[in-house]
Length: 122
Image (cartoon, rainbow, N blue to C red):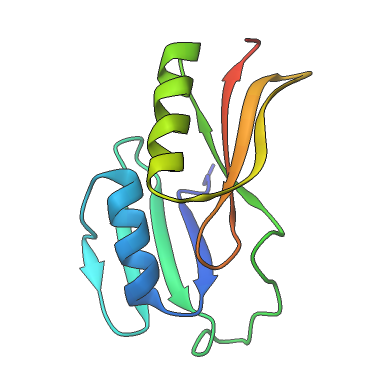
């Protein structure tokens, strides 16, 4: 059975978003054009950044309608990433908190896409 292996975010500027995600993820895109940028992640997931001005059919979804989730192994890793993202001036819309699934915080990318970081069950 086929399983999804790509996530595509519709962005205002693929170049600006590529710069943001290159810093965030610590790796370079494997493909880049004026309208589309692609990252190959260590997990096997492919992250595409597609210009919302050129996608066909036209996309009506905006940032904030979904999340990219980063599951971490432990609280030390969580605290380190939170500190790093704060120092990089990412907008944090949910400060670290405990929820029913674990310890979490949420940041935004430049287009308002939610980036949830969590430690399951912590």
